[in-house]
Length: 435
Image (spheres, helix red, strand yellow):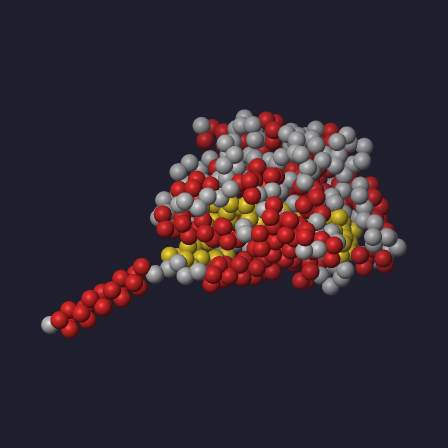
């Protein structure tokens, strides 16, 4: 009898130990594919191997807009993931989704493992923080637009491969020489609204929207029908007409025009670096964004893009504890530096940047510090970034109007007025829905 009881007690103890050590699953929906997707998977696998209490499952859920919509729909259906990667233009929408989101800093403080916003680069922490300065989402793959150029093509066209264009006029001139040398395309851009309107405004220290680009409240409205924007859209439309600028589509669609060698110049995310290295069979350079030299205050600073990680509400304390540990892991100096160096995204933490700088990475890889330098400035009310509701939908409107402008079907001034009218209608609707 004693032996039987002892056997049962041992079995019970072992079962209890098994239950105590059962790993907690954490579902992480993201939008990284290709070379970036491989790096996300590697990062998650490293975390899973570093401890035995939690298992993060990285699941690709489509492009940024698709994954955000999927995440919101899943929350409404009661089966939201624990972590959702959301692009920066979805920040206002997520912040005002009351009851759906668990603010990151608050979560980490509750589980006794605080995430400190002071650890992050100011421009990054400021964008993803509430008015009280507390982080609402976890900075992850922060990027900013930079200027890439094909050095091999520049040499062939008789251009100085060590002196990329600095102004828009110089871009147009380089485009003519590249075309004359037989290139199919001189210049193209990805994310037209982000690069040519939002960042363009910050880089030239001019308002994109009222109320400090939306940081000042829900009453913000678009102001992109002003003379400087008309000038820029006219400039690009003229380049398009003469064949030196090729519109390559929305989002990252035009990246292939550059990596295939068809276009000699390209403005896109600093996060494109990994893909250009992997798929481009030519030597390329990275430089600062072009600007109009006669605009007072230009260049100012660029704004961040990319995405941050949001945590959904109504999860267990154990899940929140694991999510916090995962966030601490990916933001450690070593991992932040590794992610930055391997992808081109900016180092989101100060320690990650310092570690990279001290390692000599920037000296060995010229141009990789461009993104950080463009962000490293005291921001103004015009250059902090853009925080507006329905911004993804507003970008769709802007992209559609730019397509009409670049194809010569709509005059730049009329196209910009349409953007403002239709965009402001959305902002009014968002304001009413929140109130």
